[in-house]
Amino acid sequence: MEAILVSACLRGVPCRYDGRHKVSSEFEEAVAGREVIAFCPEVAGGLATPRRPAELVGGDGHDVLDGTARVVEDTGRDVTAEFVDGAQRALAAARHGGCTEALLMPRSPSCGRGVVYDGSFAGELVPGDGVTAALFERNGIAVRPAPGV
Ligand code: SF4
Image 1 (cartoon, rainbow, N blue to C red):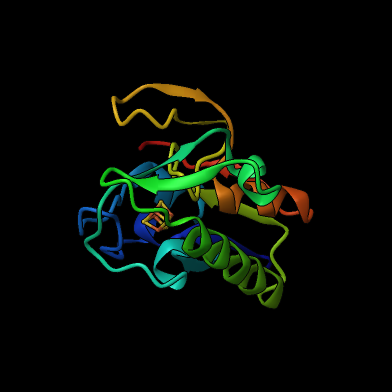
Image 2 (cartoon, helix red, strand yellow; image 1 turned 60 degrees about the vertical axis):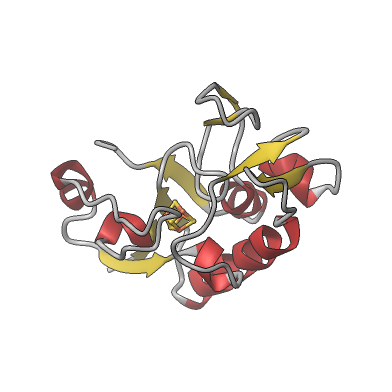
């Protein structure tokens, strides 16, 4: 059975910035019958839970990996290094588990795929990927946003 890497918060781990998780029946149906590797890049990168919300500023996760954008908390604290470190640890976990696919939390500055918040902390969405989603895509791991959240 091929393993799939998933955002840990979707699997019930209370690792979101607000100390909550994001369990949904749609997600459980989507991974039924699969070996699941649950991983939280932000916690793996050294950030505490709960923590301040963070957004991508100046571009998306690809731009962060290229060094032309940053990840910043709503306090102004720069957490780019923690997000990149967490993404690299997530990639290592996916490779270790033999994953070629990931099902990740939508809109997150780490896990978002296709759409992320715009850096204004005003709830506005723009096209783009989170840092971990971008690193996965660059390394041949197909990322899908999880349904139902
Ligand atoms: Fe969930 Fe990903 Fe955010 Fe961790 S980094 S809380 S796994 S969305």
